[in-house]
Image (cartoon, rainbow, N blue to C red; front, side, top):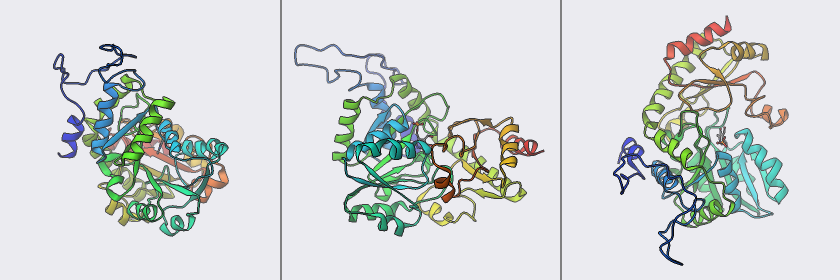
Length: 377
Ligand SMILES: Cc1ncc(COP(=O)(O)O)c(C=O)c1O
């Protein structure tokens, strides 16, 4: 089926009791058993929930995967992944990832004997060169948050296969509408469903998708054993939202392209970063591995004073953490999303104090452009 047809129907059938077209929110913690040792197949809410199963099937289909395993947040999914490893194992990670991912790995998981190398994965020879005897996983984010640097997914998947490593891609920024990492040979895709998949800024969630039975089995076990599951209502909210993912993403992209071009041509920013701009150093790779360029734009305004002027004076953009909702958000990564990354680390990849990140929403583009113009005045 086409993307929109899958987005609207995959994982969902009319409710067998009432014919309800929309999958109900199954608010139950437990299920009656027929007799001792004979259940309906549904035993306990942490283990089985029909709304969650529908969501897992839906997103797995959009990611061209067989299995989806949903979690209470993107970070809960990122944490669950670490259960594929054991003390002494080494992971290669993109040096510029979401700040919370950095914090979890570098400040928490290292206490359990895991070792991380922070690598500029946009250069494949860095990835191959970072493989050690104890390396077990490559974790990439592409495009990265907030520098929008790309990693060649096909190349990383090949390095992982040759070295018998599990390869993971955080696909939050592109959503399955614009990028399917499994198609390029990656083993596992991660999403913060909080972002584009939900798209309405009213639920927190995460999901892992894979085609590999053994990773699925282990992650499904961890979902139940550690219990970081999303509520049925949050699953329902995301399931409602994926139905409109295609139309939302098209509009996000149309607006982001026009917005990036405005920033670029008007010269209001010192540097504009958007994979859809021809001057993006990986524009060609973006055209190869993505079906579009997404809705995120970053701009360096040169000085913190100028960045502050924009951040504090916009009226249509909302100054807030997060991204991917229908409403436009603006954020200062250095002090907000990436505050837990040391200044010396983030400046290595260009995340300066004057960098501003725009999550371009689906309002009228003229209003978004005017908003930045008036903020600068
Ligand atoms: C790229 C990326 N991955 C993961 C996460 C974590 O997701 P959550 O906030 O749902 O835990 C975020 C959150 O901003 C993100 O931007």
